[in-house]
Amino acid sequence: MTAILNPSYRQRIGYQAGLLGGFAMVAAALLTMGDIATREAIAERRAEDLLASLEQVIPPATHDNDLLATTLELNGPDDAPLTVYRALQGLEVQAVAFRVAEPGYAGPIALMLGLDAKGRILGARVLAHTETPGLGDKIEVARDDWILGFDGLSLDDPPPQRWAVKKDGGDFDQFSGATITPRAVVKAIRGGLEWFAANRDALTSSAVIQQEHSHGNSD
Image 1 (spheres, helix red, strand yellow):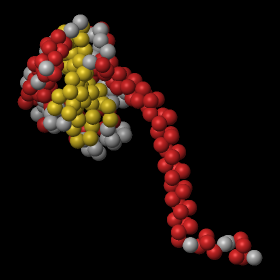
Image 2 (spheres, rainbow, N blue to C red):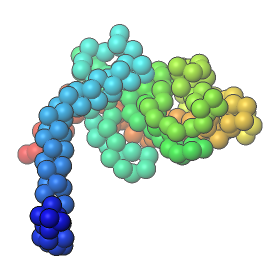
Image 3 (cartoon, rainbow, N blue to C red):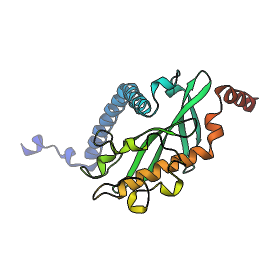
Image 4 (cartoon, one colour):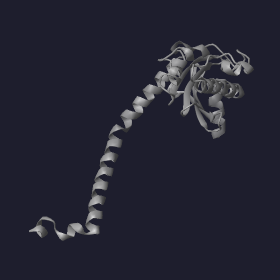
């Protein structure tokens, strides 16, 4: 009776391995189907989130183009490929936005930085961080207006030596008990300004010139 309820073949390694493999294949198939079914929706949500971030650092009134469709690919401050979103009126560049990042207290802090064509800050917003809740998360505009203090500033305003938190002799407030976090944000934004200054011609050249260069490269 015991042999019928628990056949001996079930004890074999080959049977158990085959059973495990079958479940694994079914699970993999379900995951693949789920990925295919949700891929487009996830891409749309990501595009919406990105556009919402861009619109916080580039005012809609400054451009008449689709920010997501007008991009440049350059090497960023860390020499890795960096996507730059350009705001145009006609073919003239009015502003640009790109991602900057620096290590914070608990991990990398990523921001979207928007600059006008002269290199003045239109806005900076935190995209992602893992800083301490209640302390480091004051860099989020939803928690505190500290990040808005960068609006209107540029690489020379204040002077470069004052692009630091007050504890380090600079102009920017640090948070009580969380100096590392604002220090990282200031460093990231200053790095973005320096990168813009070094690449100003490529970033702000008109779309016509960009197209001519593109055609010339393809001939």
